[in-house]
Image (cartoon, rainbow, N blue to C red; front, side, top):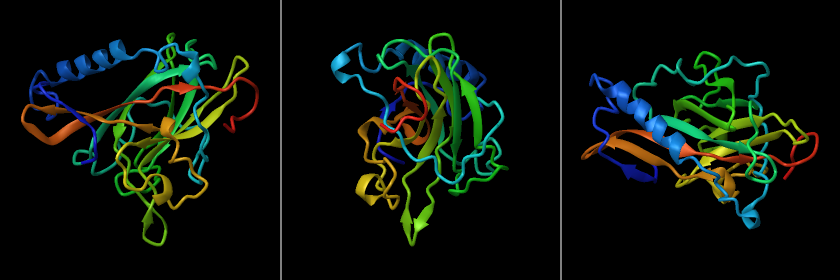
Amino acid sequence: MGKGTYVTGITGFINGKDKMAAYYISLLILLCRISSVNGNGGNSNNCRPTSHDIIGPYYVPNPPRLLQYCTGDPERHQHERLFVHGYVYKSDCSTPMTHTRIDVWQADLSGNYTLEARCRGYLRTDSRGYYEFSTLYPGKYHLFSDANRPAHIHFKVYGKRRHKTLITQLYFAGDSSLGTNDPCTVCSSDREDLIANVEYYCEPNDHSDCIQVVRFDITLERGRGVSQT
């Protein structure tokens, strides 16, 4: 398991066998929503558009609307489960981009981009600019020789209200393939704003089976077209 912060004491949250499991899952999501405030803290000195990244060869237009991804992965019960959430902001880093479409796609457990795994879809931010979805921790894949790309999730955030569309990728802190170890020399896995910390919500005294939670806030660039920041 990768690096991250362990949060215990959420009994019954993981295995799904406890009758209270659904309650704890809902509680976790609620806590994520409550704790989600402006990632830049309203400080204009830290305000800048989210870095862009390449779209890659596996983007498919017009995916289905989904909030749960990779449900077709045959190994999903053994794979590390992941909850991704955050806000999409206008260029001032505080005004929410409401009802904005986000396309999401990623590799399955084996590092493959297959339609059968149902690891691609789209969702929209709500009236606060907030979004959330559940998925599986993406597998790595070979790009050249034996070199692996870091685990990542693709995002395409559609610009509107005089803001540019953003194509980017979410990476995970502690991945050994980030930055100079990434065989994709034109990718942005060295950009700090695209690398998210992971928190693990586990059973007390048991870190072998956890649900991972990642927050990824996005700020769009003002203008038209596609962001190249």
